[in-house]
Image (cartoon, rainbow over all chains, first blue to last red; front, side, top):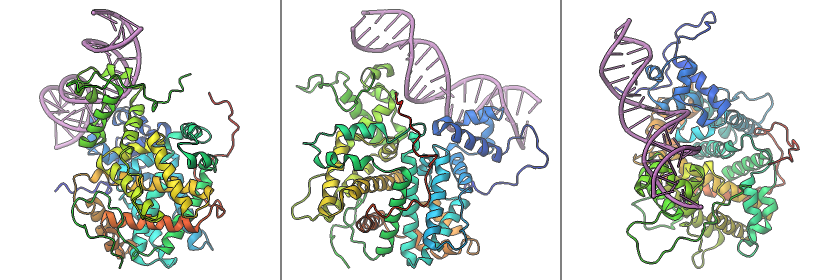
Length: 249
Length: 249
DNA sequence: ACCTGAACACCGTTCAAGT
DNA sequence: ACCTGAACACCGTTCAAGT
């Protein structure tokens, strides 16, 4: 019934020649939306603007896309197609994994707003699956057991998405975040002694340095933490079940 | 110029008695906004709805709040005031850190949309600073060097925020995400052999189990990875560091 | 001087009317 | 049958007019 899979695009209308004005296809809509996202950020893209750029009314898009959320998902997966999956010659699993995550981060960074968008979505398109597939194989090569690797892929992608999304707003800005810098600088020594003492550290490092360090942390942690080490400490939104805790096995 | 600090609230109008209808203060606006966020999610809150709930027109709010972004920041920091910072007796640093992050995650989870909101914001209010302060002291106790701890705090908070934000949309839903389940199930064995083989693992575990495992991974990684181990592998959006833009403002 | 109704410039989505 | 102009129900923000 309505179990539509938006990623199974119907065959593209035709494609020969280079028609000056496209005949309004799902493809054209996604391309234009991604273009707007890249040039003006998340709130610079809208169905109405896409429609008018394609010289139609907003209602026309609904023939090709069910709603804004679906367009978001399509845009994300199209962008993810740019992620470099192929490993370079002689790169070991560690280097390959680092390259892949770096490429993923770069793709998300190139279109401001894309990372924010990636959160509302579970990121399940063919291109997202390809990324997951590659990461799983690299972790297997690293000797990580399958059960652990499955969760590790989630952790890695989520973190990289988050770090890019966090800085998505700094698009135009330069230097370390001014609001952070100001707040940290003003943190009183008496009330916030550790923050005050660490204020230089808190603001130090380039994004690239912080990224590299964080990935290293995640990899080290993943290698050292098989799934067996899961003593539930602080449940997240766990309504019922469980009152007898602290039972390590 | 307009270097306002929105967290320095002017003294609350008066507070004695319990007036049935509040006289429209910044406090009342933030409380109502948070209430809407908690009951209807991010897109269930708007300046207009807050205004009408407070029985005024939307323009009136601008006397107390500069814009929607500022309201977001105020709402977030007010919510963060609920995070439990006090360590329980006899809890070691590890348990305390786990408790704190769990509390942080729970607070964000309680108001769907709060975590999403936390991304657009650098989270620098007094309550966010208190959390940072506490985490720094716990990591110091753990023997993590100051420079590493500073980055680690960012990593921990960012990850927890991200994991909550990712599931913010599952608010009403039950079980593992249907879209993910479907996509993983349909992943062809030939094209996605690892995904196919790991499909059970990818969907396994409760949110609480995954959360506990991830925190353990982060801690293990942080303990094993001092900042010295930072060989920049794949720069994120690194145009060309250092552009000498000293003409801020 | 303060407050706010009404207006402005946008949204996503629907649907009846036109081809 | 398909497409879409116009309408609907919202937004955040501004500002002139009223007190």
